[in-house]
Image (cartoon, rainbow, N blue to C red):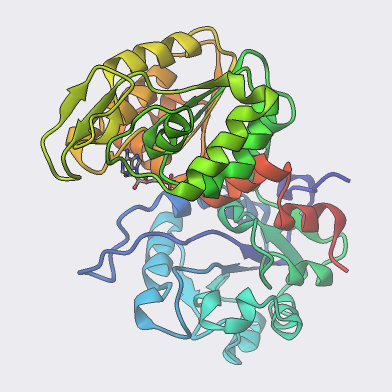
Length: 396
Ligand code: AMP
């Protein structure tokens, strides 16, 4: 069954409950300031379309952070303020998602836009509590999910609520863009298909590595993710970040018939400590007193060569300890290489590689930069997400 999206239905005069991912970073010193508004900006086209269609009421909902009950620093007030500015329309923030006043607000002709306070102030949200889902559903005739970043969560607002909207649960425009982009990689990738994986923990990404190996033509591994693989091949890695468990997992992967598709670093930028001076190590082996913190220039050449004829590229995870500028070159160079691949569909998913692409200013030259780190990885792993399946098949 296919998802119905908002532009396939006439919602004029209807009340709509819409789930977004407004989980934006808030300035630690000034809680009224949002430090990156991308997630809200990405939701604006859906909100604007609903307004343009002439919905009677639009009840917006989201979570922010991981509050343990109502906590002022996790209030959606800065989001309400920003939305009102962007949309040039009043946005009323409710006291809570279950505030008794919401029902009254819904009977008034004004305001049209109502933002429910942080859903996670109610523990029932993450517990997918049926009564909480029912209360949320009581606010509107239609439900829209545009929260791709949370679509892998089986929560009341992303899952349980759908039960109450038979044939009236729709996908938003951002959700569609994310699914279409991910499907190009997950369901019908053009070959050569090259994946680049980085970051720190093999164990977190083991399933995705195994799955992806049967699909890709090559898998380039960088970042701390590379060291368990190097060690598993008997190559010394000095004091680089690496756990015994990860080496065991890496050994298993290298023994798979598809293991030969893995391409590992040939050289490194290393140092005596995380904050130490960068030293180029021209060999695959890293001396005992050094830790690898970035991929080296020869590795970059090797990676560039693997990528040059590719038709599909998936990148997840930084190539080193890129938060320190001494060790960020590899990560930014990979972003640059991807931005120059004119014949390939390039997809960047996962928090740190996304922020590297944004920092480098190359976002516009990448095929798709996913707004959901965990969600995009799970989609690649499983071919769908629980929130998306709820829209497709309903919830019993
Ligand atoms: P992940 O969440 O698995 O994508 O890991 C991202 C984190 O891995 C970032 O904070 C990076 O700084 C860190 N990282 C990547 N490569 C290295 C490395 N060689 N040594 C230490 N940390 C690294």
